[in-house]
Image 1 (cartoon, rainbow, N blue to C red):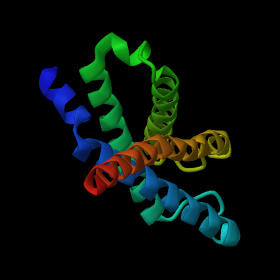
Image 2: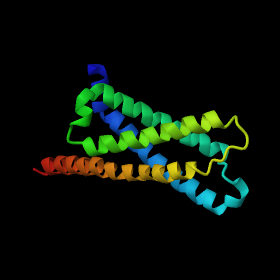
Image 3: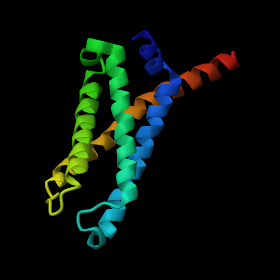
Image 4: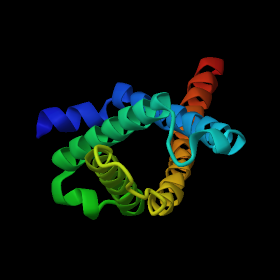
Length: 153
């Protein structure tokens, strides 16, 4: 568990997660815009590239969540970040559930996927994760300003 804790405490891990959140937000924005402009063309189906992209981000965020839970144990649900941790857990569970549901039912023809629209709307809440980055950038800005101030003196 200490090795996992070291991984999630590293700057590389935080940077990777921040980049993944940003890339996912950009990807979702593009997908929403593209599907809105081409809705007649796809009739409930998403282009294969969108499915792959969504799957990759779902796996990344699922692995991130698993690593954080392994490293923090019960503290994951009792730390000062409890709101973000629960929010991430709900969003990742919904994304994973949707992935499994689509994968299992994709073999069945004639299945009505309109109920998945509800899950997609909830998945849009993932965009709220970008707010978490503001804390990272605020801390980074404070560190840079501190370094600059020490260089002046």
